[in-house]
Amino acid sequence: MAPFLTASSTWTLLVFCSFMAVSADQRIIRAEPGEEVILPCRPAEKKDVVVVEWIRTDLKSDQYVLLYRDEQFDPDAQSPSFKNRVDLKDVKNGDVSLVLKNVTTDDTGRYECRVVQRGNNRRKRSNLKTNLISTIDLIVQGNKDGGNEDGGNQTGLIVGLSVVGVVVVVVVGAVLMLRRKQIRSSLKSNPPPAEEAEDENMVTGP
Image (cartoon, rainbow, N blue to C red; front, top):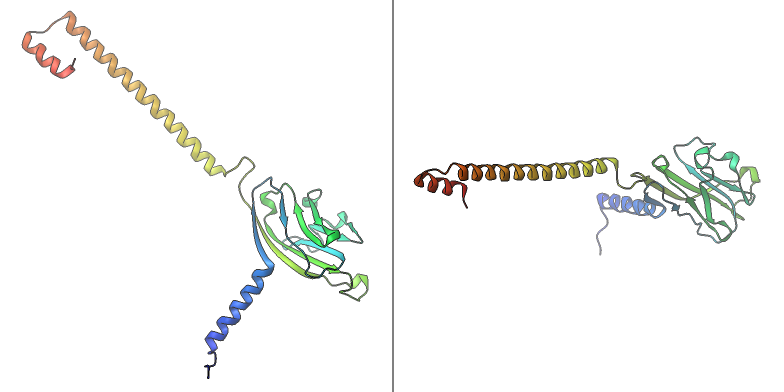
């Protein structure tokens, strides 16, 4: 007979199952400023979508990223920072993924997609309860010019130091060549005795 699960193993199994359930509905999407991103959201049931609410959890409760109802968008309930930048991918076919254009670092945050489908709620329209379909953590990093500012400064510093190094080498080489020519010219005009000349040649070279 197989042994029963211990308390610790049961707890581990429950935590693992809970983690898997959360991971199935929650995603992390990374982007760079200026890009267009799609935050996925599609109900499992193939029924007509009546209401779509896209919210960001750090915004005021009465401000939506996007609100769709009565087969049209409601711009009056939308946060000003998202006006003219968001759309639904294909709401007629049940794909209510959020299309977010020209993202900035200010768009970083947690987004939730809530949906009401036809036939899921028999309550009055004003009391319809939305169902949470997906949760997306959007992370926007970098800048429009590509890379980050620190990386750009480091690159500029490296290039500057390289140029300075080349200039120093050229100047030092020119000074040494000029000095060598002066020594040779001085030796030709005032030749030293034979022994000194031999010593001098050994120092200066040919």
